[in-house]
Every structure is written in structure tokens, then in C-alpha cells.
Amino acid sequence: MLATLLLVACAQSLDEIESTLKAATDKTSYENGAYSAARSLADMRTDDAAKLRIELFDTKHDTYRGVYLRDWFYSGYLKSTSHSEGDLMLAAAANKKISSWHRVILLRGIERSKVKVSGKLLLSKNFLKDADVRRAWQHCAGVLLKESRIDFSDSKASSSDKLIELFDKAGAPFHGYAYLDSLTDKQQANLVDAALKAKDSGDRAIAIRILTQQAPANLNLLSIAQSAFANNAAGPRTAVLESVVDNEIFIAAPLLIKFLKDEVAAFPDLPSRFVSDIGDSLRKLTGIAFGNDPAMWEKWWNEAGAGWLAEAKKDSTNDDQQERQQDETVAQFFGIPIDSSNVAILVDGSGSMSTSQLNGESCAEAAATEVGKFLAQLPKKALFTVATIEQKPEFGFKKMVVNSKTNRKKALDFLAKRPYRSTSALYDALEQVALDSTIDTVLIVSDGGSSAGKHQYPGHILDGFERMYLRISSIFLNWPL
Image (cartoon, rainbow, N blue to C red):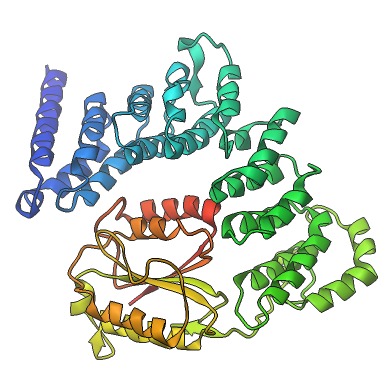
């Protein structure tokens, strides 16, 4: 009898939560308990609660403070524990009528939780129709396979064979390969092809990272590295540098020295992020601190490189004992050196920026002042853009512009004229900036967090940033005012 009463109480509680959340469409109805209702729903581990989270997610996209509710629904996905919850989320992720972003979030929730899922659902070809969903599915399915969280008893395939076949058919970036115990020659060839030819630079970057992780002795790696540095896209370049270091591919050292020489020659009078990045990678790979001087590295390689390469062994370098040599930088932003001539500057456009104060002026004014100082330090040939983070990012220019006196004035006029009354969608602004693959550094100025768009909870934003970084490799630097 007691158990029956408890079940009724839970059902009534869920009904009340559903009623509150469905009514939350504007400020008044949101403030009538919607936030606490979404938080309570996230902790409920019943199938009906899982269905409600899935049902409501897309409906709250444009409602007042809907991002707070959706992030709690996402938290509910992450807390999922049961096979049935996993299958409900997976079935929804395969549903093409659901928004692409929601399908991606569902797959991330499955990946990061500890649920098991049915193999038959995971093998749906619906996951391969949308580019963003396909990438999220590859990552999620690979993790599930590696962690033995797939129940193949409902599928004609008694093993993982059909899933791996689907990895092969999914196309770039072949993220599922990252979780296999070993790669076949054909799978390595697929990764090589993606690393060299994929249209999306982010897919090339992921393919490079997986290939160097799974097959560091692949003979195509050096040609892939050369191809990456023949292009300005930051993603593949950074993937090469980080992968060479992480997997201790010592044979790449002379090629990195060549990249350093070429980069210094290409930017004789401009700051270059990749001059610093290549020099840092050489230091980590070799254990030698020659800074960013290509002449010193060339001299070392010509005199001692062959001997070093013959003796180099895995785990032989100790990065903790090596200090990075700090080279003179051209410009600083809030006192932090910025080594880049391809910069996007994002300023929080929310209402609090016009009301909160910093050193006797509004935060919006303080941000504009610092932007002006920073741009004045950059060389005229440097490229930049500026935007305010609002419900949708508002850009001061249609594309990256040279750092001329005229463009600096236009940027400051743009910041001065913004209303600073909006909500701020930080994650969305960064995604928009990421569409330009040549931007290698993003400067963010804000007096608080995000209040609109795809995410507002810092933990969810950070996870998204980390995934974004592996593809585009822009450096995100945040200055809280």
C-alpha cells in the first residue's frame, strides 16, 4: 500500500512539473517555478521523466530563459543510468523531425552518461544524414563500443562488426576509429584521405589526430603535415603539432624546424601564433629550449639531429623540467601577450555591461577602451574582426579586415553604438566565429556568463568548447570584467 502511495505521489509530482514547464513561455510564467521544476526533472530517473525532457527540449528554444531549462534537460540526459533511458534518448537522436542541435545533445548525453543502448537503434542510418549529427554519432558510438555499453542482443549482428562497417560508411572524420583496438589498412587509408582531402578543415583536423594516435608509424604522416601547413586553417595545423608531441613522433622534428622557418619568413613584421606554437612543440618533442629561432634549431639539427634521433625514445623528454621561452610580443590585451595577427574580439552585449562599473566607467566602455589600446598595438597588416555577444552575434564587419586607422575607428564606433540591452549567447557566438577557419585566436570580454543560445551552464559550455577546439583549434581567451 505504501509503495502504491509513493508511486502516485511521484506521478503527481511529475504532472506538476510538466504543467509548470509547459506554461513557461514568458518572464512571468518562467519565474513561476520553471527553473526549479527543470532542476527537479533532471534528477528524476523514470522513463516518463526522460520522455518529458525529450518532448520539451525543442519547444523551449525561443522562450524566455529557455536556455536555462534546456541545460537542465541536458543535465538530466547526463545523469541517465538505465538501459531504457539510453534507448529513449537514442531513438530520439535518430528522429529526423527533431532539431539537429537537440539530436547532437542527446548523443553527447548518451556518450557522457553510463547508460547502455540497444545495438539495433545505434545502427540506424538516420544518423548519417545530417553532418553535425553524423559527427556526434561517430564519437558517441565509438565511446559506447570501447566501454562495452552496447547490447547487441536485439540485432541480427551478434558482435560489433556491423557497427564498424557503419564507421567505414560514415565518412570524414571517421571519429569512431579512435576507439578501435587497431586499424586495418583500409581504415588507415580512409583517415589519410580525410586528412588530406576533406572539405571541412575541422574534419581534416580530427582525422589527423586519430591517425597519429592509432597509427603513428603511418608513412603518410609527414605528407599530411606538409599539407596542413600549406593551408592557413588553424585546426589541421594544431592537430599536427599536438599529435606529434602527444605521440612522440620524433622523426617529425626536422619538418617542424622547416615549418618554423617558413612561418617566421612569412610573417617577418607580424605576430604569429604558430611561430610560438611550433617553437613550443619542438621544445616539448626534443626536450631542448631553443625558443622560436629557426637558425638555432637548424644549426642543432645539422650538427646533432641524427644522433638525437637515433637515441630518442618514448617518454624520454620531461616537459615539466623545461620552461617555455617567452619571446617578445607585439600586443597585449588586459596585460596578456597576444601572438596573433588573425584575431576575433567578442564583447558581451548584455544589459549588465552598461550598468556594472569598472574603474569609474561602465564595463562596456572599459571593454571598448581596452579593444582600442590592443588594436593600436597590432601592426597595420594584422587582420581582425569585432562582434558583440547578443541573442545572435552582431559583427562590426562582414569579414576580417586589416588593422588600419579607419577600421579601428569603425570597430570602436560599432562598440559605442551597441545598445547593451540584450541577452548573451556566448556559445553561439563562438560557433559563428569558428566558421572562419583562418581565425586562430578569439578574445572574449564579459562581466558574466551566457544567458541565451545553446548553453548557459559553464560546465556544458566548457565541454562544447573543448570539442570545438579539437576541430578548429582557435585559442579562446576570456577576460571577466
